[in-house]
View 1: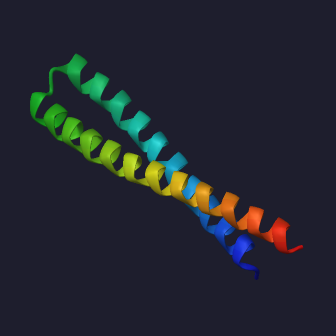
View 2: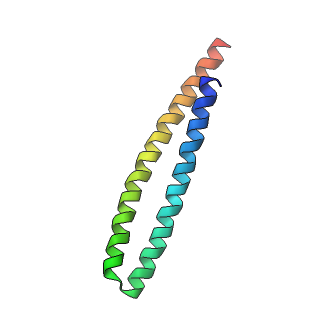
Length: 83
Protein backbone atom coordinates (compact mmCIF):
# COMPACT_ATOMS: atom_id res chain seq x y z
CA UNK A 1 0.00 0.00 0.00
CA UNK A 2 1.40 3.39 -0.93
CA UNK A 3 2.21 5.95 1.73
CA UNK A 4 -0.61 8.15 0.45
CA UNK A 5 -3.19 5.35 0.65
CA UNK A 6 -2.02 4.44 4.14
CA UNK A 7 -2.42 8.04 5.30
CA UNK A 8 -5.91 8.26 3.80
CA UNK A 9 -6.83 5.00 5.53
CA UNK A 10 -5.56 6.33 8.87
CA UNK A 11 -7.49 9.52 8.32
CA UNK A 12 -10.69 7.56 7.70
CA UNK A 13 -10.15 5.72 10.98
CA UNK A 14 -9.73 9.06 12.74
CA UNK A 15 -12.92 10.32 11.11
CA UNK A 16 -14.77 7.28 12.47
CA UNK A 17 -13.45 8.03 15.97
CA UNK A 18 -14.48 11.65 15.60
CA UNK A 19 -18.01 10.76 14.53
CA UNK A 20 -18.34 8.19 17.32
CA UNK A 21 -17.17 10.68 19.93
CA UNK A 22 -19.59 13.32 18.66
CA UNK A 23 -22.50 10.87 18.89
CA UNK A 24 -21.45 9.85 22.41
CA UNK A 25 -21.34 13.48 23.50
CA UNK A 26 -24.81 14.04 22.07
CA UNK A 27 -26.08 10.94 23.90
CA UNK A 28 -24.61 12.14 27.19
CA UNK A 29 -26.04 15.61 26.70
CA UNK A 30 -29.49 14.10 26.26
CA UNK A 31 -28.94 12.09 29.44
CA UNK A 32 -27.78 15.27 31.17
CA UNK A 33 -31.08 16.97 30.32
CA UNK A 34 -33.10 13.99 31.55
CA UNK A 35 -31.19 13.88 34.83
CA UNK A 36 -31.61 17.62 35.30
CA UNK A 37 -35.36 17.25 34.85
CA UNK A 38 -35.41 14.41 37.39
CA UNK A 39 -33.19 16.45 39.72
CA UNK A 40 -30.66 13.61 40.02
CA UNK A 41 -27.80 15.90 41.08
CA UNK A 42 -25.20 13.22 41.87
CA UNK A 43 -25.69 11.44 38.56
CA UNK A 44 -25.90 14.77 36.76
CA UNK A 45 -22.47 15.85 38.03
CA UNK A 46 -20.98 12.55 36.88
CA UNK A 47 -22.45 12.96 33.40
CA UNK A 48 -21.23 16.58 33.21
CA UNK A 49 -17.70 15.45 34.06
CA UNK A 50 -17.92 12.72 31.45
CA UNK A 51 -19.05 15.24 28.83
CA UNK A 52 -16.13 17.53 29.67
CA UNK A 53 -13.66 14.66 29.29
CA UNK A 54 -15.22 13.53 26.00
CA UNK A 55 -15.13 17.08 24.63
CA UNK A 56 -11.41 17.24 25.42
CA UNK A 57 -10.88 13.91 23.66
CA UNK A 58 -12.96 15.12 20.72
CA UNK A 59 -10.76 18.23 20.48
CA UNK A 60 -7.64 16.03 20.36
CA UNK A 61 -9.19 13.82 17.66
CA UNK A 62 -10.12 16.91 15.64
CA UNK A 63 -6.57 18.23 15.95
CA UNK A 64 -5.17 14.87 14.81
CA UNK A 65 -7.60 14.82 11.89
CA UNK A 66 -6.52 18.29 10.80
CA UNK A 67 -2.85 17.27 10.95
CA UNK A 68 -3.61 14.12 8.94
CA UNK A 69 -5.45 16.22 6.37
CA UNK A 70 -2.41 18.46 5.97
CA UNK A 71 -0.18 15.38 5.58
CA UNK A 72 -2.49 13.82 3.00
CA UNK A 73 -2.53 17.05 0.99
CA UNK A 74 1.27 17.34 1.09
CA UNK A 75 1.68 13.70 0.09
CA UNK A 76 -0.76 14.10 -2.78
CA UNK A 77 1.05 17.20 -4.00
CA UNK A 78 4.38 15.34 -3.85
CA UNK A 79 2.88 12.42 -5.78
CA UNK A 80 1.71 14.82 -8.49
CA UNK A 81 5.18 16.40 -8.71
CA UNK A 82 6.94 13.07 -9.20
CA UNK A 83 4.31 11.53 -11.51
